[in-house]
Each structure stands twice: as C-alpha cells, then as structure tokens.
Length: 239
Image (cartoon, rainbow, N blue to C red; front, side, top):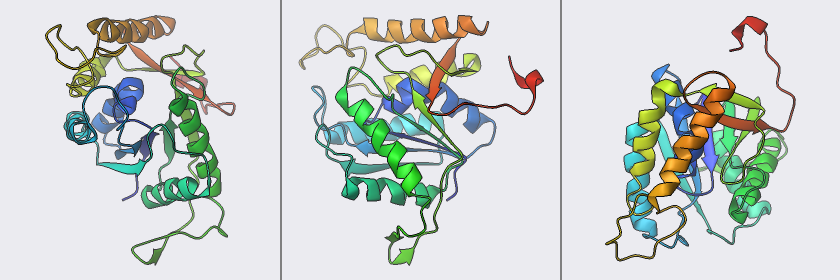
C-alpha cells in the first residue's frame, strides 16, 4: 500500500499527541495516511503492551488511518544500529510515503530524539539501491520520501512550519483520550500517577495548540521542524 503520509514515531500515542490534527486533516482530504509505531511502549508506568495495542487500534479508527503497524523494537533500549535501521527501512519501502513525520529531534524523553535520528538515517538508507531488503521473500523497491518533518513534543522547539488543525481538534483530542490507561486518570485510579496521566497534561496540550494557532491567526495548530529549508511554489498558498 502506497501512502501519502506516514507518521513513524516511537511510542503508541506519540503520533496522536504530536500530529493527530494533521493526520485527521489529510484523511479528510482523501489522502492515504498511516502510522508505524516503533515500540509497544512496554516500559510505560501505566497499562501494558497489550492495553496500549488495543488503545492504539481504537485511536487509529478515530483518526481514520489506512494502516497502523508496530515494529516492536525494544522500548527504552533500542539503538540506532543496523538491525533496527533495516526494520525501519523495510517499513519505509513497504509504504512508499511521500512525507514522513517522526519524533522531535531533541526532547525530555530520550527515546524521542533517538527515534528521530533512527528514522532520519533509515530514510536516507532506504533510497540506496545497494541495500537490499525483502518482505515475505519478495525484494523491495528502494524509496526515499521527499520530505521529513519532526514533531514538537514536551520540550518546546521553535517550529519551522505550522499547520492549521482547527477543524480537527476534536478528532485529535478523542484519539489521545482513546489511551485510557495513559491520560486523564481519576484520583481513584489504582495505578501510579504520571506526568501525562494528570488531567492538567491535556489542558497543556490544548494550550500549546492554541498558542501555536495564534501565531498564524487560527484557533489551533500543530508545529513541526525540518532538517532542511522548506520551499513553496506559490506565496499565495501561505496563510
């Protein structure tokens, strides 16, 4: 299946938190959008790998993505090395995306920056014909996406581009809250409380989107960084 947009992030719920609005926007426009989670988030304080998988499936339905896959790399301990690069290369070649969005290049959680570098390197390597990969015995075609963007996550990083998600905020929020073990925990919850389970976290997520939206005079926006200079074909396409 060829995708227009592939969001390739390390933990289930990273895609929703950082790019849920953009995912919903392009699904609504008829684009083929998919999510590849690198790990199962099995080291998370709350829930289990199994509950996270079920929640990720629910979130995928809310967003309307064409496909969601988990590479099951080792949460917390994966490395940017050849075996893991090959797994990411296979996914890139499998879905042939035009655009890839991945984790923030630097963040509070060390997995985020490491995953961003892993995906960045794999994107380049996926375009090299002398690196051969196969799935189910079939040789894959080489492919290098034409654009890679990174999320802005916990640590604020100045965005290189902002995208209006005002019409899709509700979908984004519902997709995040599909992770019932992770967000908006009640005081009676038996599991340990975490930084993200506190209801204030969702309030701050909304506030961040609202603040980014103000920069382009819309209600809500999502911001992304780019490792290269971005260009436009027409100044009149800019907000």
